[in-house]
Structure formats: structure tokens, C-alpha cells
Length: 358
Image (tube, rainbow, N blue to C red; front, side):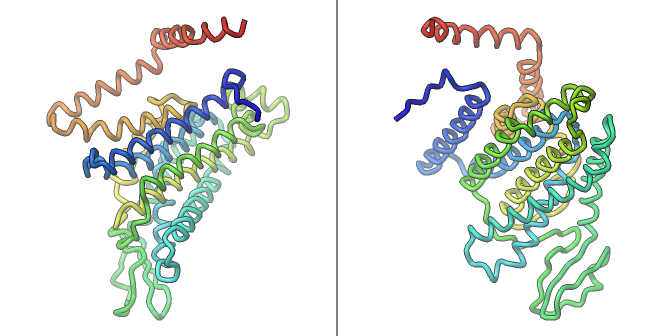
């Protein structure tokens, strides 16, 4: 049997394996803490949101870090994935009793719906240069949220009923159910999300994005990011590859929305859940974790999701400490002196390996 030599692996493969190992190690530690009662119920309640934010941050990092396009409306794609999957689950929960199958169908529906809207937005916008994508995605996030808040869909033995703005126009029988009830959203969603499901989704998505960025398509996307004119001069179809990367990014955000919706009994399209602030928070995860680093996005999402709850006992000082941590993380990742320091430390660990090879 051939022995695996870590030293001979390329940088991308090492990074991928380290990220996989980190996620699996955290999963094992958390499961041990939960089973032994070492983790509080409050912290257990944050496990699925941490997975959700990590997934959406990975998707946004593909757009911002690798494609080089700024999107500040990924909460909109998350909203599409959440509502389309919850709508599907409400329809099928009586006919499909197996929760795993039902959740897989929900993931497929939410991912495809978000990818579809990402494709529609990308067709006209990604042909342009500049920050038009940021403006359009911001507008999309607000539009989709407001459309859902005025949409009423119900079902009874007479079929489906639709209304805009006024749900009282729908005459529903006693056995009928509300699928989307305007600003009240979708209620009585089956609880299908779990920390285990979230970790599996993260691992699958990491496999997809790592293979994508290391493929010929991924290298073409990065070539466009680094030098659009040079990439165009060698025959790379700019619009095609940008659209492909952006659609995958939107689909991943939709998958995060599926996990988010099925962790709640009721999902509503409020500014808190899917508004502008949510998009900015996810962007902060990407920037602090390092643009182009999927592992960094996961770490930043976990730390910044846990931190407000860990510091809750400090009351007035909680947000002050949170802001200081944000600044420190930003300096550590992007300040030139900090980058030099990290490179020197990394070089010290690499020197013994070089001597052994000699």
C-alpha cells in the first residue's frame, strides 16, 4: 500500500485536507460535549445557525474572493432558499414520512431556486464592469423580502388559492392550510435541521467549491479576477465563467437558507432574518476570515456567532469587546506587519522540513 506523503502534496490539497480535518474535529468535540452535558442548551441552540452562516459565507467568498465581484445581497438568495424549501416541505410532509428524504428534497428545491435567481440576475449585470452587481444584489434582497411579505398562498380540497396584499380575499375551508401567510411567513415547518446535517452540508459544499476553484473553470475565473483584459485576450469567455461562479455562489447561499428555515418552526421575511444587515454580517465573515480562504470564512463565522452570546453576561461592555475583536481580527489578517509576522512564523516551521529533504 502506497504511503501518503503530506510533504509532496500541493498547497491546494493540503489546505483542503486541513479544512476537512478542522470541521470533522470540531464536530467530534461538540458531539462529545453535548453527550456529556458539558455544553449549555443556549450554546446547543447556536450550532445550526453557526453552520448556516458558515455555508452562506463560503458561497459569498466564492463570489467576492475568487470571482472578485462584490455582492451585498446574499441574504436575498438565502431568503429564496429558505422560503422555497419550506413551501415544498409543507406540501410534501404528509406524503413523505421519511425525514431524511424530505430534507434532501428541500435542499434540492432551495438550492435550485436560489441558483435560478442568481442566474437571472447575473445574465444582464455580469456583462458590465464596476460595482453594479453590489447595487443589483442589494436591491434584489430587498425586493424578494417585500414580495414575500405581501404574498398569500393557501391550499384546501378545492386546490391552491393566491392573493396579493390582502389575505382576507382567500376563502379557505376548515381543512385548508396556509402555505405562505404574508408577513406572518410560513408556520409549522417540520424541524429537519440538525448540527450533524449542517456539518455534512459544509463538508459537501467544501468538496464542491475546492474542486471548482482548482479546476480549469476555477482557474479561468481567477484569471478574470486578476486581469480581465489579459483573460479576454487569450479567449476566455468572461460572461460565461463569471455567470457560472456567481450562480454556484447563489446556490450555496440558498442551501444555507434551507438549513436556516428548517431549524425554525416559523420563518418570516423580516429585516432581522434576511435584510441588509444580514448580508453585511456575512460579508464581514468573509473579509475577516480572509477573501479567498474558505477555512477562514468558517472560523470567522463561528467566532463572531458565538462571541455575542459568550459576552452576554458583560451587558454594556459586550458590544465594545465585540467591536475590539473585529478590529483585532481585521488587523491580524490584513495589516502588512501582521502578514510579515505570520510569514516569519510559518518559515520557521518549514525550515526543518527542508533540511530533512536535503
